[in-house]
Image (cartoon, rainbow, N blue to C red; front, side, top):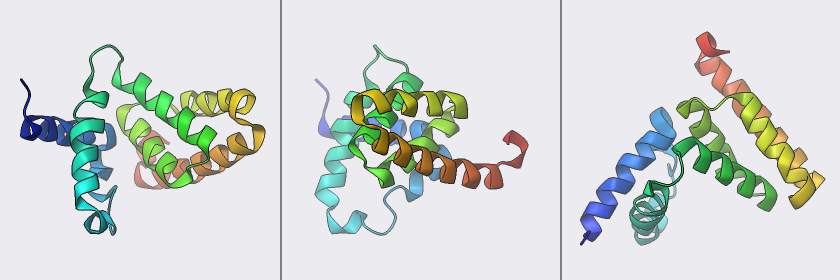
Length: 132
């Protein structure tokens, strides 16, 4: 049986794998407002769902990018695009994922997703000029 602390530790590890150098800042400034919620997210969302073995991490990340774009949740979309780049997902793969949203989530949501992606790509290229 997995304990709460084991799930939490697995979630913390997975967050590091997803977001890399950005992991310490993904909640910067608001984690103290709802610490129980973030403990829950670390334990169940990242420690359980994101840690399941049947999908590769990059596949899960692209699914989340598509979902967030379709829902229009731009702040979290930007975090997951940074995470995708950290994991080695290409900009083309991210754009294709957002393009897929247009038919199912609506063109305005896809356009907003492209705007977020462009901003993240520019920031990424500034921080990682060797990968630009």
